[in-house]
Length: 102
Image 1 (cartoon, helix red, strand yellow):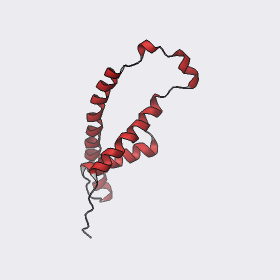
Image 2: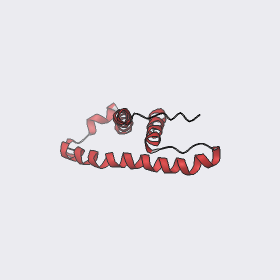
Image 3: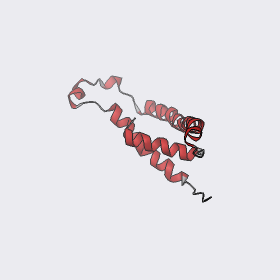
Image 4: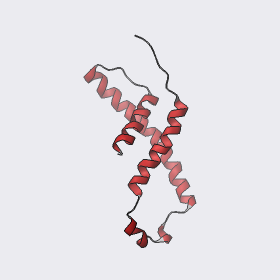
């Protein structure tokens, strides 16, 4: 069967932001008892958060490219599976992050 289904790229990108936010908020959240010890002078301001965000977004998309390359190198040879495109790899990477919270 040669039925080729198209992936909705816009929906995939829109779903990626909440998933990454959930992953990072879970990793960076501090326990309640620690909130008294946070030094507000060491906290990042909005300008620094913008810089971090601008650096992280391309890294997320490069991670999808890396995942595609890794998947296409290993899985088709072992399991005789077809190669995947970039958006399928990015979606699988998001799904793995959401399920296993890596």
